[in-house]
Amino acid sequence: MDEQKWLADRFETHRSHLRSVAYRMLGSGSEADDAVQEAWIRLSRTGAADVENLGGWLTTVVSRVCLDMLRSRSARREEPFETPVHEAAPDETAGRDPEHEALVADSVGPALLVVLETLAPAERLAFVLHDMFAVPFDEIGAIVGRSPVAARQLASRARRRVQGTAAGAPADRARQRAVVEAFLAASRQGDFAALLALLDPDVVLRADEVAVATGNIGAEVRGAAAVAETFAGRARAARPALIEGSVGLVWAQGGKPKAVFDLTIAGGRIVAIDLVLDPDDVNALDVVLLDD
Image (cartoon, rainbow, N blue to C red; front, side, top):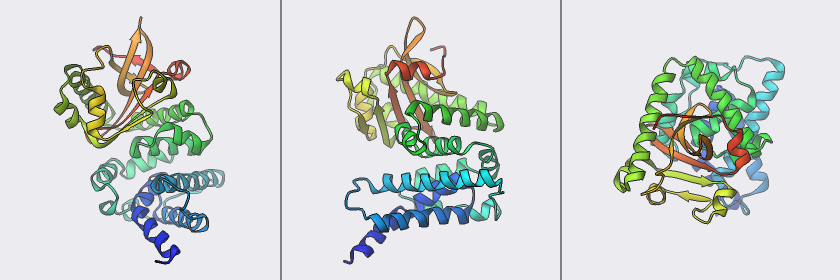
């Protein structure tokens, strides 16, 4: 098969996801198409021979293109919506994970897109990538030129503004807490089946360098079974907490957080867990302990 044809076929398997990401970033169907096309141009020029994770590489490229477009738009103070939002929305039925893409579509309506327009470009990118697509903060930080902790703070500021505008914010937090408390109870009891039910099949657990140095966990654990095995019978000292405004888990000594389990929840399931043990990073987070 011709190399360019082979590359184009691989790109097409990611197109729907890339357009979903770009549309959430830009709020414009035509601009999302432009961003995806630019990603293809860059891929066709560089090739994929040295790219281990093509989907991740393309998501990063599209995100950087969108960030440049958002910054340019802010400088020009242009109105982004050239067509009604419902007409520009991407097709969510052909994504690489249709169930997750459908959940994302349900969470992003015209009203939220209007709210997103009030965010600074880096805030919008961090919020969209992490809260809607579970991209880890170390990858987001590399895109915006910030540390992972700074990227987390960008997302949290955006989240607070979005939640402050969204009428359903209190109910959303209550649902988050219900999932977190169920996860904590299942972990303490070693209830493997209950843990599996609470975890997305493609859930990913990421640990920072300090956590990995303890020797008890790898840098990344993928899949519901592997993550459930990691937590089964553990987390006995953890307790619920608000982490940058979202419900997660914290291990604290004398009321001072020492370890943070930052959970990303979508559709009633946990899709990502970021374990933070680095003292500087933990101290940089806005953590409020909740009653267990």
